[in-house]
Length: 326
Length: 105
Image (tube, rainbow over all chains, first blue to last red; front, side, top):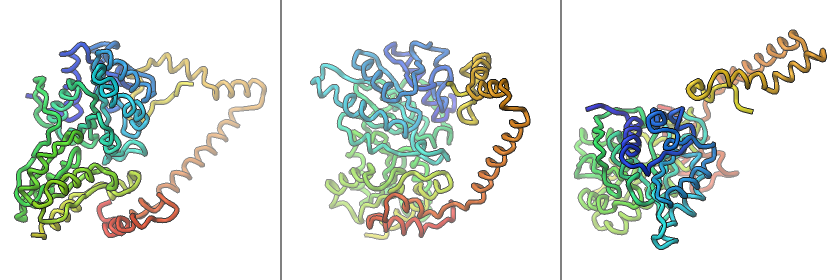
């Protein structure tokens, strides 16, 4: 079996979906002839043709509106927005229409579109190319928000997102695109949506995270293990709808919860997870819930980027601190 | 007016547009047309252009040198320009950013 990077796994899943389902088509800026800004759609235009891998004008709001119309009429459009900073332009169509179509029509119309958005920092990109705006999308009832954290989960979750009957915002951590390779079996088997993945089992503290931060969190868990602290790592994967049961079950076992995300602290999705734990697992908690996040500011330019990103050291400090409570 | 150069330095524009199209765009490019017009009416010469080129190069080199000589801003500058005055809610984060220092930046 072949090794694949995350961006190659995305490409494999898109090709598989195009192969399997004639209703699937891809839309985006430079995704066709040029193969996409990150090469996620490399080769698909030549293989499937310009009618199914569509180069669009540079107009994110228009692309999204087009996809909503296609989805409502029976297609399975998969939109690529080049960077999270450009996805803000799609919010009107996504929140006011895509997320509401099923509810507004009491199920007569549905909106099975996927919007793929490379997101997050750590790649020394300019302004508008590094943000983690997932909480803007998790705030919208009716939208699924999915974040893969490895090549295998990118493949399986993207297939699931494309097959899902409702709109999915699929956020691809670009720091992971080429950071690692793993064996990806191109068998067309999807992974479940709405389910968190326990990446490492442990007894003393639950580390909850998603996307590229799983790299630092798993590093921290390995270091903690050498110190005699057993950390459980939960990759949320589908942010909304949240698999609260897996998180609560873990915290009930460990009694301690540290939430790690790259987005700013205030209004970040970690707040929702902390609230769920406080509401439903308070009696299991041995220590306050802690959050290790980006700071409450605009993502800095490359020279200060490393000062913004939650570091393994900060995760370790939080985990050790909660384990000092008993 | 279509852009004449590639988008970022990593972009290989030959993947998605033909050289013959780019050449046609260069021929129709407004600055090139202006040069032809000014030259035709005797208001522009090769030496004028060489002088302008040298002046522009100097200006760019000076700007690049000034940038490279500028030290990185301190980490706490991340939160110092969000509002006219630092909100109380950001004070603890600013202190934490400063405490982390410049070490691994």
